[in-house]
Image (cartoon, rainbow, N blue to C red; front, side):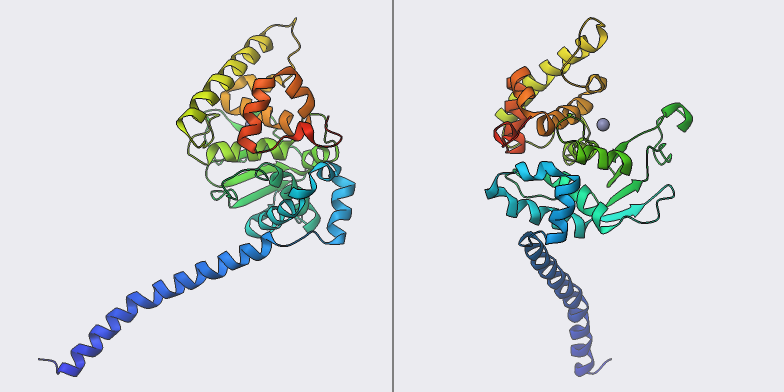
Length: 285
Ligand SMILES: [Zn+2]
């Protein structure tokens, strides 16, 4: 039979074995929360604004009251996501990270719920158009899939073609932007399936979203089949409701005034979701 002192030591060791990992976890959480707060307070450095002015001039349209938040979100996305070079690309440079993160930041700039793509861990960057590396099974082989400019996976990755990232950044008014497209998919996938219905706040929001998006999606499906029609939105949006949301998001940020004119209810719905009114920004196109 062990001495009383031995029992006390055993109990103390058992208590510490539980307490120490919990204390470490709490400390880590506090540190990471402080680090994020610091990132959110970080402004762009002069060298970064030079890069943005040169390669992503659209950022200058962001209203002044949102620019501090924009730079903070961009910093969070630069520092909290892994950027991996693929397909022969040697490195994802700091400039490349900045340009990817800044475009992605637009999509969460006005959202009321402050979330930074919590399911997204890695951003894989190819030098140009790529074929799917085959990590997902679609029942068809890679050769049949053709080349891709971007992909968004529910498993925590976005894949981007750098050629298309930079083209989309430099041309901010053609309604085509691969980063906005793929990060819209991430927002859609944040609540599970990629179904064109991202997380909304109220039951009414879901009802209205379904009505507006389904009607515009069906219109695009019909227009895409009719050679006599030239739909305003990219017909690629007619391939699936999740693609419709991603394509409409590109138009929302890059062709805002025209989208508002052509499809005012769709614009209004996206404006509510993104918490922004880019058609009212200076030089909106
Ligand atoms: Zn897509």
